[in-house]
Image (cartoon, rainbow, N blue to C red; front, top):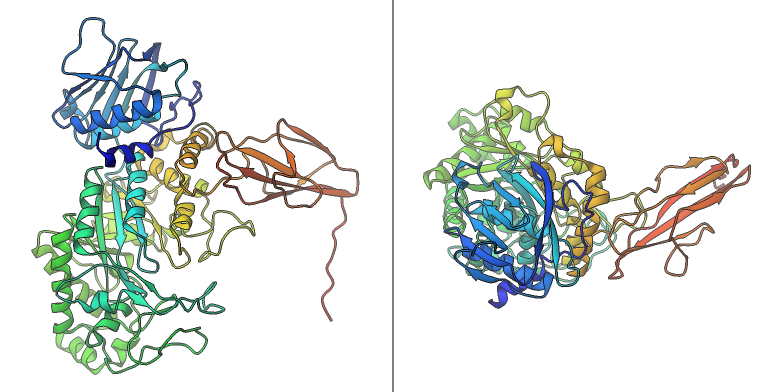
Length: 636
């Protein structure tokens, strides 16, 4: 087994047996259909591994390497089985009758048969690994079962912004490993923005020489209470990007690159000022913005928000962007090229004599139509290269480009409008929990975020197909995506903390039928074991708060507090003396009874500590038995 494969296997090992009563056998996302049968398959050293699929050799290696780590022994690989020989069989026979990316798993006392081709067989292996409990006496007991599974949506995506803060290749690959394990098949890579240009473009070297570095970054929430005064820099060479594309493709993940236009262009304009309507104007920097270095000339932005200096729609700019996109298309074989299109203020276009004359020449009634002209010009070029554009829902304004796919982020309205116009749509509304840079609880322990509130339960509750669409219009909803913007995510550890467990909830709404969703089963039966797996492999996930604890005040005199650890093997500590709980507080071992005298209240505070030492935020529940409200007097 090669080293890369062994490293990948290390991230797949689960740490705990699923409950035998779990109807989903511990699998995330929940399969379409699971039918229990009689008996069990006993996986031991006598079992052989049989590959009868054209593309199954890598899958067999993947599964065998997992079994080595899980059971402590490798299976002998063979082409055929002997009579009465226990075997795990990988086959593509019958896979042509399955839906795209679909698979089946049939477990009998004698055989486990995984059927699929390409991504389908790969996903069969992921599910097989997830459903294997821990070994007992050198044996793994797997219940007899029939699984029939395929995705609800063809597009199951997540976006990572590397422009605001740069993340190394090692992290990108680690992230991709997790996406593959949960059957997320699209990685949207946000490569350019006002605060950094992150991809080498050989025809325009200043994009990375100048545009990939900024002198500082604001401290704290916008507009900032200081500046870190340290440069933020980094970019991916074309060879590095190709390597990541190849790495993802081996796990059936498509990478969609995003090159922002016409707005969010400060880094590109800092490198090539002639791309601005006003090349000689200094970058506008508010007096309230804490700034590092020079304020003269065109600057890569050090703060967040929307900036007036956007691309001028000139022949020179279109030549520049077409040349950039040609190099991008040569790196990324994806059907889609994301061109942004969001948050493009029209102030400079209104002030520009060139833009106003261009509008008259083209018969455009306003700047929104000028933006549509801009997007359509780019789309013609991309279509001419055999690709399609995808853009944020602002590309609807002024008229939608003929073949564009719309990514609906400002609620669902943009997606609804696009579907009604018979355009393909990816639903990614921030209002529905799909902005995973938002905070995960209302605890003051949460790190600084851009705001918002997006617990994984909110994502889990979302149905990407709006009810208002007709049956015909619904077919244009091609999938769903979660977005991680990185203004306030400076480290890979914080990126992981924001991603997990929310991406697990995303995987289920992207893959599983609506009727198979079950938040209680997801949160209490399957998620604890998956989080324990992430804990063991050093993924810095957000540790959920105790299952069963109320985040709202409770009234009464007698309380029985019944809690459950949200991570397998984790411990819950609690206090009722107003102190912040830690290992020095009470260890929760069984339901606790708390009596509150009439006219008093108690505050139950808890914390969850995972086996690795990772801990949750502190959660408080007020237990009130008629205590008088304490009014705080206004300061004189």
